[in-house]
Structure formats: structure tokens, C-alpha cells
Length: 191
Image 1: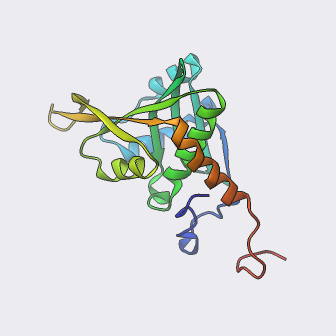
Image 2: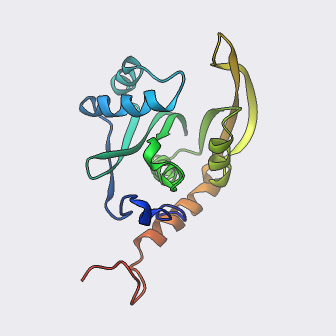
């Protein structure tokens, strides 16, 4: 797990070793839509998610028990992937789970031979911009009036990319750290 994934474990966050990735399926759409609608002023619709499923986009959920921690939707292209949606449920925000989702995405993209990941993010979403920068994404452009906003206005999108020749080392190092057993005598180990 990346640094931060278990920071808030003492505040009721899930045990980082008990979370798992599963495909985002039609059966999970109600839970995904509840998170989506509670997260955005202009959320994706059920039809947007259903279209992604029909198109064969990579759609993954991060679960803790039966609770939805977050999800991502990715469209694969020739030697690249485009991150279409990455959302962390409100109860799990600021605990490092967006980084976990991104690291899983990087590992998946590299395994399929992608050379870059692309995304757009709202220009005003400072938290998301910081998370993406912390994972190695760089700003490469701006799309004017890309997103709908309140009162019939629009907001610019920042176009970012992550060259995977560099990103893979970070994601692989994170995965290796997560796979290491805790040090002898570390707290929290079960007998």
C-alpha cells in the first residue's frame, strides 16, 4: 500500500490488507451511482456506466468487505489508456485510497503494454490535481470549457499524462512494500 493508505486505520478505516479489487459490474451499479451522485455536481449517469461496460472498458471497484471504497473506469487505446473516472467514496477520502486506485491502474496499464495514461481533471479540483502530481502525472494542456458547472457555466479541464516508463517503478516499489511482512514485534499483527 502507498504511504497514507493506512494512516487513518485507527479512525475506522478498513484494514489495508482486507481490501480487494473486483470488476465493476451491472450488479454493483447502484452502489457506484450512490457514490458518484454524492461526489459530483454533474455525475455520470447509469447509462454512462452501462455504456462503459458494453464497450469493454476496464472498470474496477476497490472494496473493503461489502463497502465500496472507490472505483475507476479506463478506456484502452493503442499503447495508452485514458482514465475516464476515478472516484473515492466520501467516507474513505483523504486516507490514501486514490493513490491505491492509481497504483493499481498503473500496474494494469503497464501489463497491457501501455506507454502512457491520459486524463482530464477539473481545473478547480486542487486535491485531485495534487494526487495526480504526487503519482507522477504532468500537466500537458488545458481544455477550455470542458466540464459543465453550476448556473449554465463551464469549467476548464487540465489535461495530464503519466509516461509509464517512469511510473512503473513507483507502482512496483509500492506493491513490493505492501507485500513485505510486518517487522517482528510490529503492532497490529494477529496471533
